[in-house]
Image (tube, rainbow, N blue to C red; front, side, top):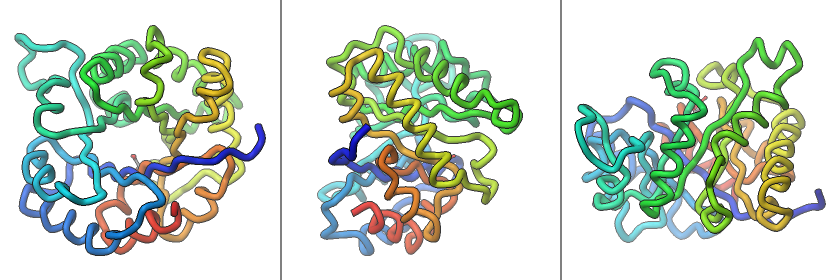
Length: 255
Ligand code: PGA
């Protein structure tokens, strides 16, 4: 695929970190370092209880607010769950679905990832759908197969009209939180496979416009090389998103 004009999205995935007061401080630290930047979208995906504070702290800034999960039912007897309309009313614009930690520790499957993505899109949220292979799958040479399958199943019955609100994050599981990053070329190759799957389902123009992020130990040192790759349109950042200086370096590299 020839070089594309990219829309870039840098999203921080805070995971289970930051109390509300810490969240407020972190957002103001990030904002003071990136204000005035225009070249990419910046999102912070915060724990549910931080949402009200984060909504107030991001208001009027270029930082958009995201959540880390959403339930697929609209309402009802689902103790402990949060619906898409609840997120929306609290000012959330993005939600991560299918993160590998949810798949690994909380029984998330390709089917529930798809249901969550659909519920979020129907409520008018943007979704960041995570896909990625485990170490043994990479070693077995089936990375492309695994990621293609996850992508296809996650997008099942999602109409083309909703694709402008979909981001796919390629996150090799072995690279998350480990300090090991995929090489620029390997990450680009897999993002290219994802783009080809989307092209096959929705056509070339949707595939060209799709934002595909890389995630997995992206940091202030390696971000520039990864973000320069043709198929990589941003990052989903865990550890480095909790450090304002490092996160700002990544945002700058995406400009
Ligand atoms: P990491 O996490 O940057 O700490 O590897 C990325 C993620 O899990 O989204």
